[in-house]
Image (cartoon, each protein chain N blue to C red):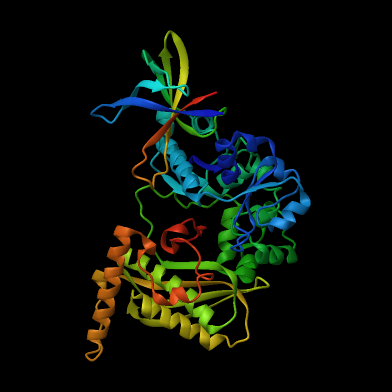
Length: 414
Length: 84
C-alpha cells in the first residue's frame, strides 16, 4: 500500500501577509487584485474574514458589504513564491517524490521514506510542526493510499490539522462527503450526477460503471476510480520535468476592448510573450487559439492551424484572423488570451520552406532573436513594439512574460 | 515590531554566515561573544521568517534574525533584525 501525503498551506496568500505584518492578524483581511486594473476580486482571506462569509472570487465591493471593516491588500507574488519554495525545501528533506499542485499544494509519496523517518503520520506531524516553527504558516495534511483521498484528507479538517484516510476508515470518512468535493467534479458534472441521483462520493463509487460510461464517457470511468480509492497515478518525481503541451497567456484589461484596434494592441502584447516563451523552451507551434471573455463573464475559445513557427508576428496574425472571423463590432470584451499548442522541438522539426519567402522569415526571426537578447540583458520592457504605445491603458502591466507564472494545473495532464 | 540593524558578519568558505557585531538604533556597537544556536524560524513578534541566531552579547542572550531578501534582487542579500 502506498503512503501519500497531500499538503495544503492554509489561506496561503493571506497567511503570508499576516506573518509579515503581525498587525493584520487581528483584523479581517483579504488579498485582492487591483480595482483600477479590474482584477478586483478576493484571491485569499484570513479566518476572521472567512467568518463573515467572504469567499475567494468575491468582488471587492461584495466582500466589503459582508464586512465593513475588511482590510484589503494587493498581492505580492514574489513573496508567495519564496514561501512556496521554502516549504518545498522542507518537503525535500523527506522525499524526492514531490508533485506541486498550484503554488500552495503538494503531493508527497513517502512510501519509501517510512524506514528513515517513521510512519507516514509521523512524517506528516513533523512537517506540520516544522512549517509552523520555521515559516510561521499552518498546513492541513491528508495521509492516505492514493492522491485523491490524500487531497480529500487535507480538505477534511483545517487549519493546522492532519487527517488519516486508510483502508479501514475510508468508507466512513470519504463516502458520506458530497460528490462536489471530489477532484474533477465541476459545476456541470455535479449537476449531471445529481440528475441521476448521485449525491455523495459513496454513491459515485458504487454506481454501475456502464451507467457512468454512458453518461460521461471516459471521464465516467476516471470518476469512479477516483471515488472508490482505486486511483493509482504516481506522485511525479521532482526531476521529472513535465512536457510542455501548450504555451498561453491572457489578461483582463483595465477597460473594455471595443474595437479591432483595441483587440489588436492586446493580442500583439500577448503574442509577443507567448512567442518569447516558445523560444525559451525551444519549441515551435502549429495551432493558435484565442479565448475571449465578455463583460457578462461568458467565455468562448476558437482555434486554427498555422505553419510551424515561434514568431510573434505570425502568432499575432493568426490570432487576429481568428478573432475577426468570429466577431464583428460592436462588441465589449473584458479579457482575452492567446495560446499556442501542437508543439514540436526545433531540432525535431523539418519545415518545407517557401523559396520566395525565406528572406522575409529569416529577417523576422533575426529581429525577434535580437529582441530576446536585449530583453534578457535589460529587462522585458526595454524594447517594445510600437503598436503597444497606441493605447497604454490597455497594455498596462509590467512584464507579461514573467509576471503571470502561477497557473492552475490540470490533474489529468500528461 | 522589528528593528533592522547594521551587522558585520563573516562568510566562511562553505557559505556559512556568522554575525560578529551589530549596531543598535542609538549607534552603539555590540560585539557578539558567541552564537549559541542557528535555525530557520518564523518571527511571530516581528513578522516574517528567516534564519534565527541565538547570540550572547555582554552575557545576555538575544535573537538576531537574518531575513532573506527577494530572490529577484541580486544586490540585496539579506537584512538583519531584532524583535522589540
